[in-house]
Length: 139
Image (cartoon, rainbow, N blue to C red; front, side):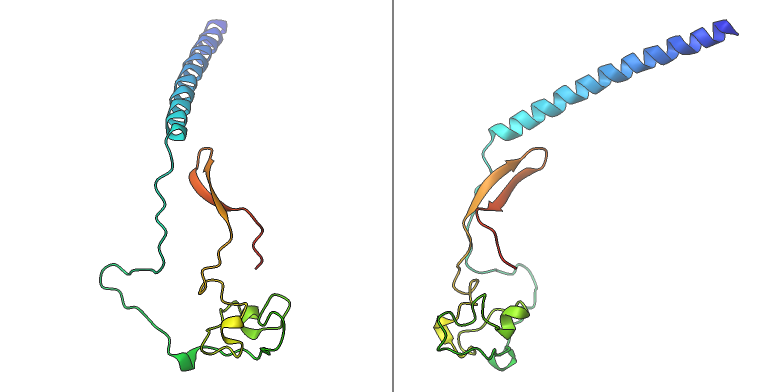
């Protein structure tokens, strides 16, 4: 019986050594792959102004009469701004310049006017390339 137990211990120890060797090999391969990926630059970022549908896709364009109109006053310093009670902003819609009473002075047209926050390209370990904002973005 003691002979069988010692045989199990030897087999178990051998299996642990083999598993440790395999783990070290995989770790070295993974680190080499990550080092190779980190040495490369991110794929080129191409800025686009409009989405271009590809294939047979139906593009929906809203009629001006369907766009919700807010009740903001154009006489305020920052109409439809963060501190205002703009209905569209509360519902997370952008105002349309032809529908909003403030027109071009409206402060709830960041996407329309392409007013995006500053961003930076980063390399996330084990994840790949990413884009982060350099300032907080309010909801």
